[in-house]
Amino acid sequence: MTAAPSRRSLLAGGTAAAVATPLFSPSAAAAPSGQTVGRSGARPVTPGADVAATGDWRVLRGRKVGVVSNPTGVLRDARHVVDSMAAQRELRIVGVFGPEHGFRGSAQAGESEPEFEDPRTGLTVYDAYGADGAKMAALFRKAGVDTVVFDIQDVGVRFYTYIWTMYHAMVAAREIGAAFVVLDRPNPIGRRADGPLLTREFASGVGLKPIIQQHGMTVGELARYFNGELLPDEGDGGQVELEVVRVRGWSPRTTAHQTGLVWVPPSPNVPTPDTATAYAGTGYFEGTNLSEGRGTTLPFQFIGAPFLDHHYSDRLNALRLPGVRFREGYFVPTFSKHQGRTCAGVQLLVTDPVRYQAVPTAVAMLREAMRYDGFAWRKDADPERPYWIDKLSGSSRLREMLDAGHGLEEITDAWRSEVRHFERVRRQYLLYR
Image (cartoon, one colour):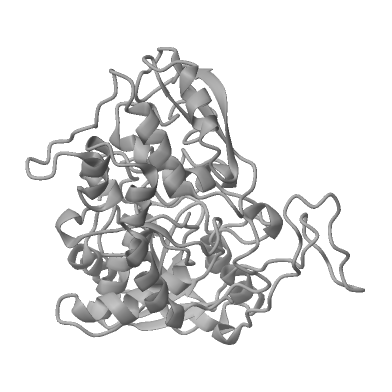
């Protein structure tokens, strides 16, 4: 998803826990009599959008609604929420706001769809990509919004830009006195919190505020966190009127594959839940001259470069990192880095999602890649913060420790206290136990 530095209840719906099903169980758990089951054998997971739609969208009636969404904002029957809302005569949808990649998803990384009239619904779709709170507020005023609805599938990582679109939309809603409603969805990579904390000096479109890299929260929980911890210090201060339509039947221990939900790629280079699992760490390779697998069928799972060789997989497997194996792999990207050239490297294979640690795994992969003479950090046009890896990791610390030759344990220990503090603070905002 990250590509260029310029990028910048019903609410009473319960949070019933899903039936616990062991990962990779050879047989699904039996459902109670009369209970419909999803593909995983667990009780159906019902996203917030479906909870609201089942109630005929009563939560939005009588309001002038602006919807921030993209192709992932679908119901269980694969209809888009905007299409469902627009078909309701009792609802007044005054505008749709598209983030990076656009509302209908026609744009690549670092791009968006210009303002247009949606041919299916006739609604005006505004280009909200890269918009800060002030610009977003202007778009909301132009459309006449009094309630903002956010429905986008996140992947659980700080440098995935949709959560910052949500943050700007919350700031904008507060500015114009609008309510903010989140139609919540599962975090596909679960509750694990890990990785370094963003420092304010390295704030950018791929990390706007000081949260840790793998935050382990749903967008609804993050909205609560933003409202309680960050919005009061933004601009004139204060909070937005926030409502979260909760997911039903989901536990943070449930993997994306176990939910029974259709996976709609949240961006062109996150085609599967397995991609999201890897991306939480291998997104770091966007900050190097190695290919992160863009232009292949396995983005963020294929990592390589023309100057690597088979020893790369051997060295990584010798580390015996938990929950992961590395297959020696060769690929030719059809676009992006090393386009048209044969790259040697690895295919990352998560063998146990519970034990797998995405961020430490990626750090180990970086350390081993740095053994090769061809390795280099990617730079951008920012004269004061030229290293893209610094923006992804949230500071210069990771790069400097790697350059200085520090070991994996030393590097990961550097952010342990940050993770513990974040976990303590986020606890009061969690909705799913």
